[in-house]
Length: 360
Ligand SMILES: *Cc1c(COP(=O)(O)O)cnc(C)c1O
View 1 (spheres, rainbow, N blue to C red):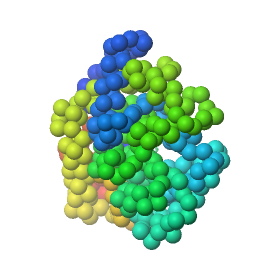
View 2 (view 1 turned 30 degrees about the vertical axis):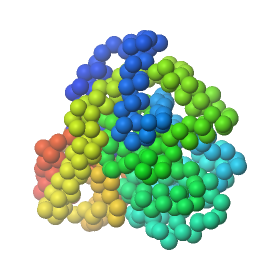
View 3 (view 1 turned 60 degrees about the vertical axis):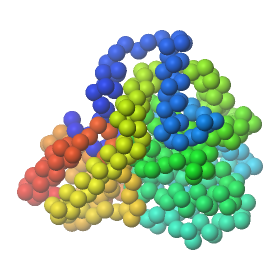
View 4 (view 1 turned 135 degrees about the horizontal axis):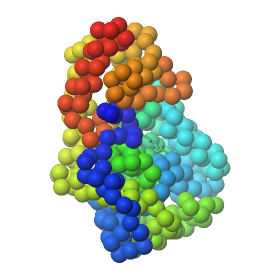
């Protein structure tokens, strides 16, 4: 299998080797050490600051999106949310379910947000901001500097879902005044799905301790408190957390977060250059790309979903289909996980072959 989806993605041999081991009992000093190191390395990579904290939730990214909403915001808040695709829309749904007052910014399809769009909401008493930094469903990377400036001048608590952007695009929590950042195990962390991560500033930690969400499992107070000694309140996905530890150390040893961002950036650039050279009948649908993925639309009317299916069934290559109304129009190629240029050569070769068969 050769996997270019946006998660789960290909894992390194080191990560796979840890996955093949027995899962140990976890209420031990040994596992606490692993968790304390995990927290330290995520803080380092997210630039969360010395007094920041990180919690590891057992549950996919959406669990941490919901935890963020209910722990950071209440019915007294007024939250602005960018709804530019299925992940932005998920935040809107979570806000609705938990009855947090909110307003929605809808960027144009495939487009970044603009300073003018944000300026409309200046001085209106907003207290929170939610954004999916890379709206993975359409591959739009929002301008975090613009958002950060807006939040600073309006004194707004900024929460960033960076699930598909962390380790792919430059990001600095402290500099951007981001109070909480969410990521997940199956995107650029390139581990199995099942763990999501919330990095918090000290102000975010304070906010968690002052709120009383109507939840037990997603109450971040418990995660923070237990995390102080490298533990989790409930049985966690121990095996995945050990794989995350191996992966974080692997990134650290290979030069750290910037090297990883550069590596993924080079792969994205290589793939985008190659599809242009080949003059494949696709167009990139986003005007603001993350290094994580390239979202493509067949321009000759072919079904994007058929291209996905043929590559999977006949070539053993997985690209990422879209769902819903974009199913026939858009597919995505991920650049995250244990991939090299030679893997993209294999994908290009398969696409060439499809073209010669009249299937592209
Ligand atoms: C993948 C992803 C999520 C999380 O989805 P899960 O399926 O719950 O892991 C959330 N936001 C973004 C931007 C994502 O790319």
